[in-house]
Image (cartoon, rainbow, N blue to C red; front, side, top):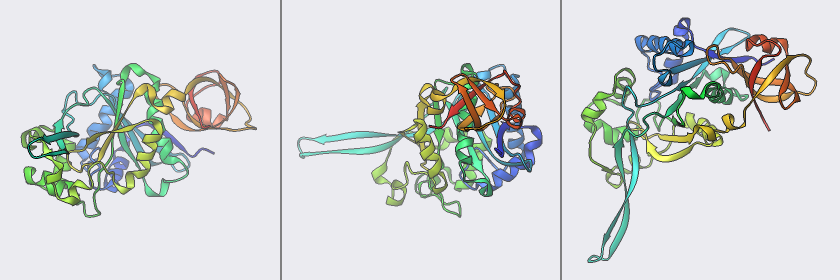
Length: 340
C-alpha cells in the first residue's frame, strides 16, 4: 500500500507545521518558528488553492505530506508562484572581472559578489522538509516531484522559469562562516536574528543595510570563500534531485549563508516534461507500473506514488484505495509520471 499522500495544507495543520519548523533548524528561512507567520502561510495557501486570490499568479501553495495509516503530518513542500513581486528577493550574483595591465605585464580574473533582485516573476519551489523517521524509500523524491505535478495542473498560474534555493553551510550551533565573515559586519546581529527577520518582514532591512558595492571574494577569509555556492549537508540529496530534474547552478547565492540557487525553465523540468494525462480505471493490478500520479486538479490537489497497471498510453488501472485517496472516480483524468 502506498502509505503517503501529498495534499493541500489546512488551517488545522498549524501545530504540525510549528513542529516541522522547530525540527528544521537554523537557516530554513521558509519555516520560521513564528506562530503568526506560519498561520499566515496556511491562510495564504488556502486562498491560493481555493482560487480566492485577485492575482493567482502570485499564489503560495503549501502542501503537507500525510502518513495515511496514522494520519500524522510527516513533512511539507511548497510552490511560490511568483517571487520578488510584492517583496524583494535579494541574492548575490557571482561575476568575474578581468584585470589587465600591459605596463605591469599582469592579467588575472577576480570573482566578486553583486547584490541583485533579478528573479522577479520566477516560480520558486522550496520548503521541502521531512521528519527524520519518515525519510528514505523515495519519500523525499515524492515530495519534491509533487511540486512539479502541481505546477502542471494549471501552467497559467506559474512562471516560465523556476527557482530553488538551498540552505548553505551552517553548523549545529547555527553558525555559518559566510555570515560571520561578511553579513554580520553590516547587519550587527546574529545569523539567527537576520534569518528570522528575513522570514517575517518585507526584507526592506536588507536593502537598508546590505553593502551596495561589489564584494571581492578574494578579500574574504578563506573559510567564508570556501562555502560560497555550497549547500548544507542535509541538502545534498535535494540538490541531486534538482539537478536530475534539470536545474542548474547559475552563480547566484543566498546573501546570508552563501547557499546555492538553481534554476530551470518550467517546460524543461523533467517531471513536467515526461508527465502525461491519463484516464483512470478501477481493477486488479497484475503488472505494476511505478512512478507518480496526481488528480491533476489544483483546487483539491492530491499526489502519491504510482502503483498501477498501464492498459495503453492513455489509460491506467488503479486500486480502489488509491482512487479514493486521490479523490478520483473511474473514467476521470489524472496526471502520471512513469519511472523508466
